[in-house]
Image (cartoon, rainbow, N blue to C red; front, top):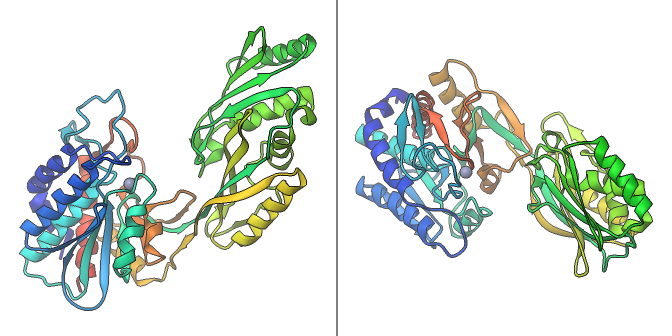
Length: 450
Ligand SMILES: [Zn+2]
């Protein structure tokens, strides 16, 4: 079936999408709003005559078709908080000047509702799919994706799938992600009393705070350094020590080169002024084994492959005071890398400074062959609408497709050059791109059915 078929459903689709966006399904522990959004879309599907199934209170699916194989579209209906400063009301669908706005419109309620209407279009046209087509809906993607962990405990993994929760073209490789904590039993520095930087392990810290116990001449030396770099470092002097507040530039841990890591930069400056010994073994490790490097060279873990690029290291958070002494690392390794070896080398290097390494999170890499049937189907669907083949790309970011065990990939709904501001104020997409995404989704779902 041609992709344009979905255009006949645009008014109804937008009506239901507005209803879905108006449910404030912000993901946070204990809120039942995400479940309400899940219930709403499952109820609409049941109204249309589809089989629906709810798994716990955070996932479910809509199913149509026959046969043993399952082809799935994976989408989620929970959202991140709206934040302040929108130019339109965030919890409704607004269309103006050729753009559509609303929290969750792009990430990921719009794609979820679009997929449901594509299934309805198939049914209205009398097509009974030869595979079971499932639209799998999650309601906890934004808080760690445990929705799909729960879902796949009882449900079969699809044979092929895509998740419209990223950008076009087709993301066929995703780096592995390791989260580590390296810690000292207690802080053993003599000059550095406190150090705090960063809030999330998967972001480049943009603020750092240090409390230093130093002599007047050392303090003057630091002031001279601060004066030489205006704007980046604000030094605040008080009687009981030197407080330093420093600013860098935030970025996502998958692209640390876009930020300025103020944690590692400030440690380097302090180490240069006071010597590493005075900062303690944890800072010594951070400065010597990582420093300002983003590729893990001094840690002995630098590597790369052609398919997915270079390993990256992000110092996401450092906390040093009387009660805690630790650094959190976000390491993203290429699909062909040996994760066991990476972990071993970091452990060995940290042990030299008397530090302990703990693996606190690990997402395996995703890798789907360009020759896989699902890639052929999605490429064709894109080409039929856009008139050219989609790029096959790789990412260091973790998409929802990781929950699909290498049976599926991230595909749409964002287009290059269209700033969608997901997770930001004024989440939006051009009306034309929304239509194109809907047609591509229609083409893909209809190819799944034959
Ligand atoms: Zn999403």
